Image (cartoon, rainbow, N blue to C red; front, side, top):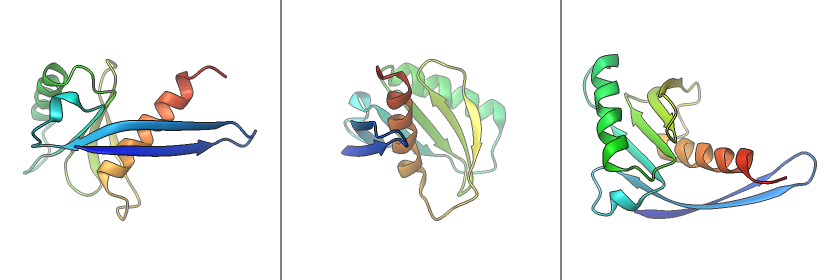
Amino acid sequence: MLTVTVLIRSGDGRVTLDEHTRTELPGSDAALADVVVVAEDGPPSWTRLLDRDRELASAHPGALVTVIACGPDLALVRLGSSAPGAARRTNTAAVWPVCASILHALTVWEVAPR
């Protein structure tokens, strides 16, 4: 498990500092993580990914962001208790764990009091 700090500075000068824990499964302390990232092998199957997402939501109820990577440019992403959606990256140089931490920070920034 890794502690991550993300600083967001908006165009109007507001600054938000987000600190969270992130784990890439399998991990020993994964149940405590705010961000969970797992890579799935094989060709992506929407049904299999949704089943895996339900498993992760049950095992990690405190995770704000869950990313199930299906290769370098496609993933199933869930924010909190909302329904999961597909994410596709065009910049595959950025790795899924980094993307997941940025999503966490943006989600916290969006709900933080202004």
